[in-house]
Image (cartoon, rainbow, N blue to C red; front, side, top):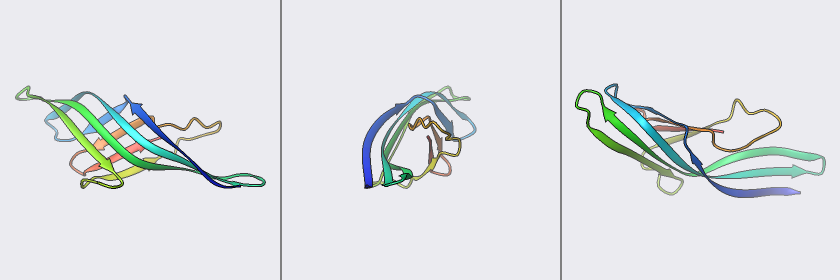
Length: 117
């Protein structure tokens, strides 16, 4: 059986933004490029794993004191991490499986992006 892999590119509209306390998000979206790998055995599926290839996040932000509006853009890829740490979360996954990125959370001060499947 062995290992199989499929690549996907998914638009995520559920984006949470945590940054400076004086800046709030006014909508955002993310594009997640990812692979789903499956390791099979004669008796069935041994393992399913999500492997991120790239994440690009764009969030419209507004400073609550100055009312200045900006687009915040962050990008991460395996080839160019740009200082960002990326985590995959899938603790709420249950059978039957619907495997796709449901939410992207960006923590600006920690330079951390979390993708929840």
